[in-house]
Image (cartoon, rainbow, N blue to C red; front, side, top):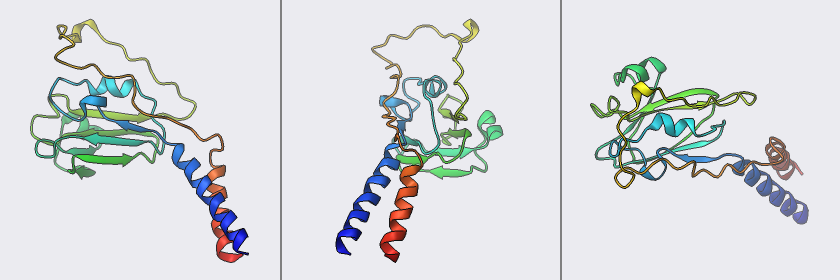
Amino acid sequence: MALVRGALALLMSIALMMELIHAAVYKVGDSAGWTTIGNIDYKKWSATKTFQVDDMILFEYNAQFHNVMRVTHAMYKACNTSAPLATYTTGNDSITIKTRGHHFFFCGVPGHCQAGQKVDINVLQSNEIAPTPSVSSSVLSPPVPSAKVPGPAPSNAVPLKSPFGSIGLATAVLATFLINFA
């Protein structure tokens, strides 16, 4: 009986690890983080990523000068800080995305959202293709030397995917049931 419980516990651990591997972690702004320094283009940053349900979005910033607010689309467009859905203030905030669609965030410090410290995390349906970002010549700004402003990295996320998908979770639930009732 002890051998069966040990084997089931090992099986459950493996299944849970497979589910954890399924998600990616994205640091907003890559090496620059969540800031107003350096004119980071968070719209461009998010357009280079393919977000999925259960991915973790990491906001790293100096909590003395910034925060993160999760808001509605209308609030995002207007930089309206009056009634955020959630506010994060630790300087190292991890947010797991649980639904498809747009997830809007900005810094609630006065003037920061207006200065571009805002990001739209769009989790596509599994059969959708991410749109290719286009840049209009009317919105181009003069080039900035790369020594002063680091460009966004393609991605620092490690999107390892489990080949077993939801089977891992089902196996974990079954193993837990068998351990408790065997």
